Length: 340
Image (tube, rainbow, N blue to C red; front, top):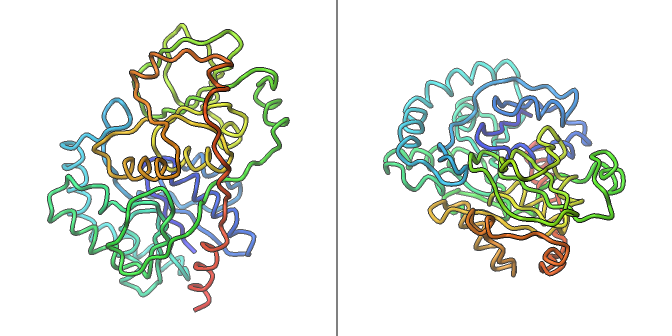
């Protein structure tokens, strides 16, 4: 099987790692195709074969790391789509050489075109599609996404996302996220986090905004790819591969509204605040689903500036229930397609 992971964002890679770890238990040979997080994938899945190659072009984000720059995105994505048939034709040679039984894509349409041309079954696994998200594109470009997604045998639709109703066949599956690799005491010891003191994790990767807020001296601040004003002392753990372990020991996570961190907060029962952009369909779909679950914890950069984080503040944050990780239904759909 060849597993294509979009070159846009890291949340796709973390959930792909979770699923690939499970698939490996079935003795399935897996080759990963990706170009933007190869080092992370190699560290997460030691010994797995990764064939570096561009898989996808996502939208360009503004300096806040959350909202989409529409003008730059239109130019970049339109160029990709207008050349995608040529790109997929080159991919065919790679597929003929590897001769896989199945293609999985999260969430690029490009490998679907290549797989269809040589009769290899393909599956999309995602919480959104580019057709649903890129609503600002010229309609003739956006409809190309729908055309190419139709080439997949079916879609496995994750929670926390858009409707994805354009797929000719789709099945809803349960939460996919990484399990912990160590117990809580071992995680704290590994990262130098004191169990006796409260801990807050900031994970605002991609944002160029410097974060400022006030906090009591006993609060431990962990940082994952987040910029802070110089007055704030943090444990910068941006090189951490198993970010879900950090989520598990945090009393609060402050993150972007994306599937990766939020799914791992839910699976660990860790309270979180999230930042979202009203004009981003995926973020709004996630936010709406969270509200339907009774989690109404959206904040803004301005709200963060007004925060004073103390032990009492953290104790007053509503608890959230654990959302179980369940890969079995997803695995079963994949195995049935391989056997057929």
